[in-house]
Length: 258
Image 1 (cartoon, helix red, strand yellow):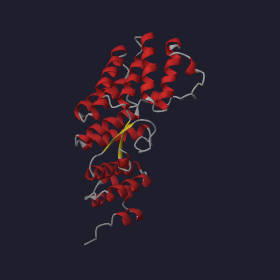
Image 2: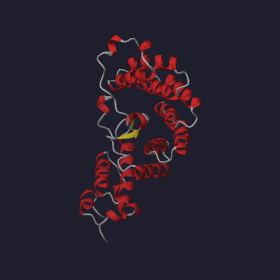
Image 3: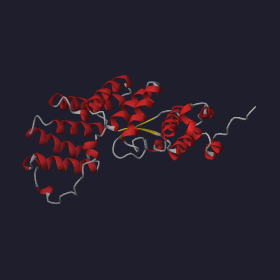
């Protein structure tokens, strides 16, 4: 997986924003002397978050499962258990715990999104889209849900729908499509052809928004990955504002006037 880290990524932000925004406290040196059974649910959840931050998912699960025995109907605990299992690539268990979270709170958009994430990682893109759409319906203003739905559409070659979701994500959060977007698991695009096409689609979105820098950056990446239709920037109306840009001319030579 490390050897593929340089590849272009679709940000599939299955680790929910409530976790990514959450401050993780410094480990408590005195906790080692306290048995999990003696800790409160709040203390156990905090300890699990610390273990998760250190990528010790087995320890996080120990704390979370003890907490769950103390609070059986806590949807957030089920969701966090699912997230730890997802990190361990135990997709079946993760999905089961995300479903338990939604049964306890049917409007828990994060858990619905995470069910979609398990399906996406299993390459069931149609199933993933079904849950991502439900998450969007529950919380339409969450950029990460639109990014996820866009990724599911892209993986099914439904490019117009993918562009629509990516564009909405950028409206909500201008940094939503950046590859270093905070938190989350990423689904890597498998082939250079798909990576090039993905970058071209992002360039269209940025061009339409007047974001020259990001548009050019995406076009460069598309060119590096061998995108064969770069010349279409001079016909595609989304690039209208870019056509007089000398940097674009250098990157993609304009057609020779007859």
